[in-house]
Length: 312
Ligand code: ACO
Image (tube, rainbow, N blue to C red):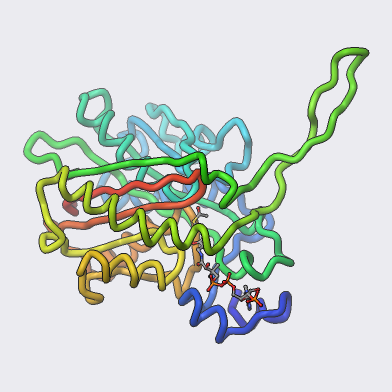
């Protein structure tokens, strides 16, 4: 769906969307595609790249805010993959989900509980966007990306991390529940309803991101005993090119070290970092041994960063 396509839907223009966000188009899931199937497609490619089979996977962490089922979709992904040994669960932290998932995976690996952990970031936000709200519908796209994290005895490649949340700003970005009372009997009324489309205070989220993201990356680098000079690649959650440029500038990381692909995909929420990582690896940009600083941020509000050494 291009910006011009969107301008037929709401009062906007390619020029406005490109200059304010850097987005040119977004990819939207077909009506019959489930989040579980989309996630499984990404997972299959990650498992193949790691030269493993689904049977080798011990744990599947599905970072998503748009599960097919409120009870979770990770187990469904496990079934599609036929990852018969794996335990699977969902992790909900909006656009921070992938980074939170990666840090969660590292805890299981470091304690020796699991060796091969699949972390998937996937979202189909097109199902929750208000397509009449021009201030938010132009931003989002659908996608899934995955990495296979493997325990190793020679080196811990997750070099540093940091995570934060601030529920005081919860109202800045929501897919909130909306229900009404349904009386079952005298004295007993339950609340029944569904979720409302995305609401967002764009400027508040923007200000939050440009302030907190450089801080959390600095913190993760400090934990890794590294500095920004050591960073080979910066991969931020792909929300807005202006946010990416501002964070890179504050950290004094030059543009040629910044990976961005939101012009093609828009903001794909939990999928945006693994999508950008995967493209850069397959294009041969990111090479084994290089150090990547990555940060996710979004609803909650939540934000986090990981510093890791790419290896395959
Ligand atoms: N087309 C044309 N005009 C628009 C559009 C549009 N699509 N959207 C808003 N406008 C108008 C507004 O109505 C406003 O008009 P007014 O001045 O007459 O009232 C004007 O453009 C400026 O609006 P702002 O909201 O001030 O525009 P801003 O420059 O802040 O850009 C944006 C808006 C792109 C949403 C920006 O604030 C942003 O990127 N915020 C961060 C959003 C984000 O990243 N959200 C996702 C977080 S990740 C997650 O967890 C899902």
